Length: 508
Image (cartoon, rainbow, N blue to C red; front, side, top):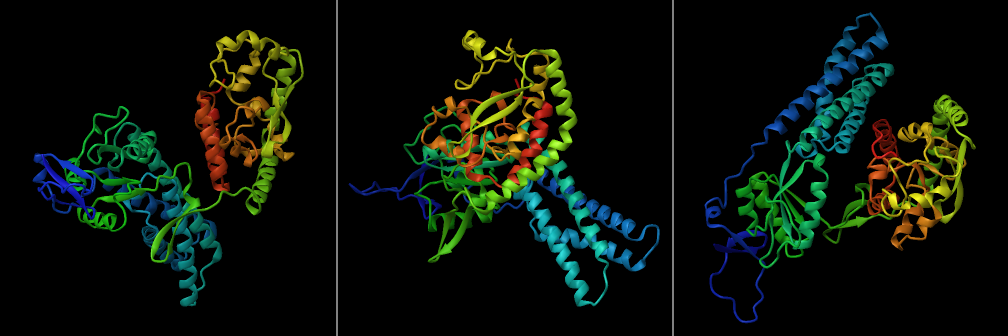
């Protein structure tokens, strides 16, 4: 084994003389003899086959979307009439659309399969195309019908986003099967490497798989990891070549920062390898993180979570407007469910229970009654059979649940009366799960942050496993939402809730 030391972030042969007494040595990385011949390796710019296929599919999808948008605009604006001028414009728009998507980084491989980033690039391209058409029309003094533009661009954007969603779903399925992944080398200290490795492995749909790690001599893993990761200690660039990695992830390593990190990025750039740096901040969404230049340094700024003011007013208006529309839409279901509950078991149609809302305020939460009237009295008999997460009482085959109640719970129809709580301002459409007072009494100091926002009819807990989650997982999801909520996130959760309800996973 030949020793290499970290020298300004690059691999250089170490001085083979023994270190002087008391001399502080830099972290030592070990390179197997069979790897030495590969350092340094010629720059590699070849892309994985799946990247090339994805790019071609994205280009084809965007071109098809533009043709669909232009065709609908021509039909909607001119019908069966043929307008040669607009046929020329319609032929130019697909080309301009592809250029706008490319300028918005819609074809960069690092964004492939990421979902939100791809959709944002499509939206930015739509805005850019609209601006380009307006500026060109003004500069050439040509009259382009606004109705044509207002049909062509939104339809193109919608069709392109649909195509990207289909591509995203297809690559997600492949990634869950271990295909179309980016090979990652993690660099850092033991605990940071383990944390970053765990987070990457928890989300295979993001497309990262850890194949090796670089640890300073003396660091060992304190818990089992995959055979691929093992207990490898080697030089960064040698590991890049040996494992043919696509991404090097630096996990909050104080020994590899500043100019050393900069020189490492230069070396990786020559090899066509991406470099990402984990700041060690977890459960913080991207919109709250920004990089600002200060005194010649790029400093990471963490914005405070929105807990009051304009954003919450917008959320309240959004909740009431959408809540009214949803209540009108599901009113036939509410009527049928109420009738079935009344006719099939004795007792009231609605079950009212005191829950804790924003800021610790208590309120009566409404649900359709799905259990027998004396359910609370019979609970003591079933405590030993609890299948919940240790704090919440759950039982898959609860004998207290009525025959109709099983179906109401399976499709979450019993939760629909909570739309009344939304209209009363006690709950939100999206938020943390409304807790009982007995649960709040068990909260740690940090857990109380989940009550900075109103509890929700649905939330991250609803689309992430529902009753199958542990108490710690449920709390982590609620805290993540409280710190990072936004209207866009609410819309995404509402859309995912429909799939979770139809799948009925974790509902009992």
